[in-house]
Length: 39
Image (tube, rainbow, N blue to C red; front, top):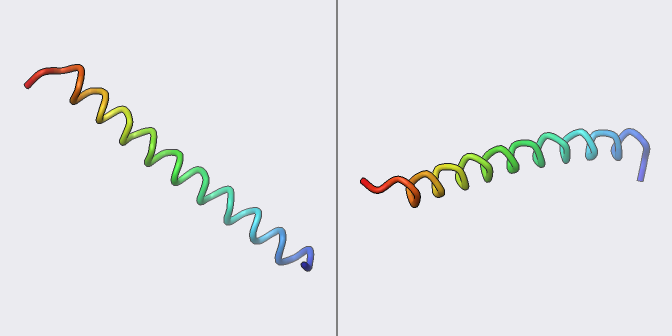
């Protein structure tokens, strides 16, 4: 693997991890809110 390619993969991996983590956090908070607050 070239250093250039690895650097790009690392950067893309970071963005994907942050994006997925944010989406999961929002989904979990929304789910907990729906479960804790009766409508």
